[in-house]
Length: 317
Image (cartoon, rainbow, N blue to C red; front, side, top):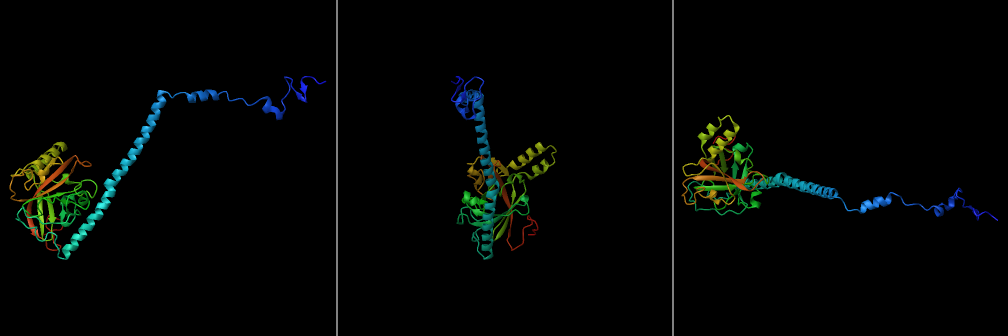
């Protein structure tokens, strides 16, 4: 009879080795002693620090996304919109040049001095009818002025306020333009100084306006050594009103429509001279206020082919 340690060929003695084929029966694999601890830890609610870190990561990802969207918006507004606006401006300038070459004047000869302020020429919205030159903006600065001040009009170039006068007329010829993006024709409007020339070309005439304000005070301001005091003095020279109370430059709210009156800021005054008003947003990258520049007509000369007025580079007229 075999010993109890050996049954069926199996050695069950404490020191006997377990046959290879029976290991899974004799010693089933034990769970990792560390596993229950890790599971318990995973099941425990997160600490306050864990929650704050989660929120911080989410907030960080949100800020990165918002930053990317904002960057794309800025790129579109500042660069892409300029490309589209430049294309539209080129088209309207070409159309105007072709019309003039063919003897067709959108103004039909009504852009003459001393025309009554109530006389208006009906122009299609978006129609270009004159060119604007501002020498202080560079010798290459030239923009066609279109009829209307809606967004679609201003994307093609500076726009004429339809209720105001035409170039050379007694009263106020008022023009709006974007400051940043969409062609930004008036990006540097704040750089104009008393006495600076603004030239408007029509099919019949050249009209030379100069910025109002105290030219004498401006020249005196240039001699101030301290930059801060000099800038303040220049601003004061521009804000100086003329005999009819019209300054060279002012900053107003977006609803201050009195700046485009026949006598800006004086709705009951009678116009006795031809003025030009340029308006744009202020400050840059904001539409909170409006930057306004007023100029007065100094002289008008006939438009004779390629001969330019002397205020423009190479001009002799």
